[in-house]
Length: 247
Image 1 (cartoon, rainbow, N blue to C red):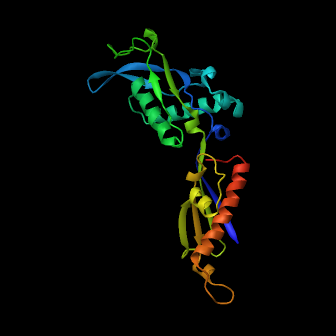
Image 2 (image 1 turned 90 degrees about the vertical axis):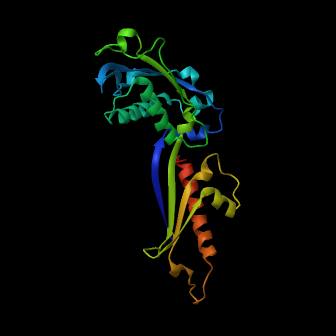
Image 3 (image 1 turned 120 degrees about the vertical axis):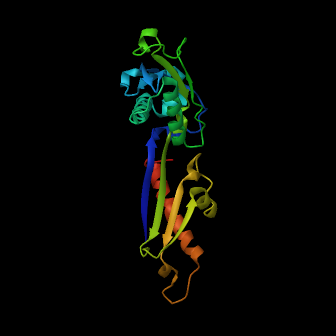
């Protein structure tokens, strides 16, 4: 008998998984940023308030790929929420960040979360005339510099990153663990139906030394146990796929 464990590491926009085969498209997003000039170590710099409201983020839905909107009609809302959360987390560090530097950090954060199968292709554009501040207390708003534009491919974030852990009933502290990927399992089981991104799912197979002993006292090869665990892992994986939990 085996036990299955699912470890969720990160999740966003899982409904987009079913659009993974669609063409890449840059979605354009407008951010209304607030920043004030402050003195930092003798220099005037912009300090950006990254605690945005949902109304501060406008997603140009005409730039969303058609297949994306078909598979996930409400894509704009989770995408807006993700950007809000990322900016709030960046702002929580209490660092003094100019708007352009804050968006660089947003890019880095989203890039770390990207699946690797689809390029993020993040870019940002400042408002026309944007420049360094010239006096303390100066704001972006007084110059009409509040609206910034970013664009990236949401499919890069259309994942639920998870790992499967399958173990035998006897597995315990002295167990043997084998780390594989779903692509390895597909090869061993001659499965050719993995979808883009599924092969990268990590799987840990664990068994006890006692599992190698047959009832008649003879020993079965470890490969036999591993193969049985791989079958169990693949069956569990198919259930997760059917329920919409995907990488």
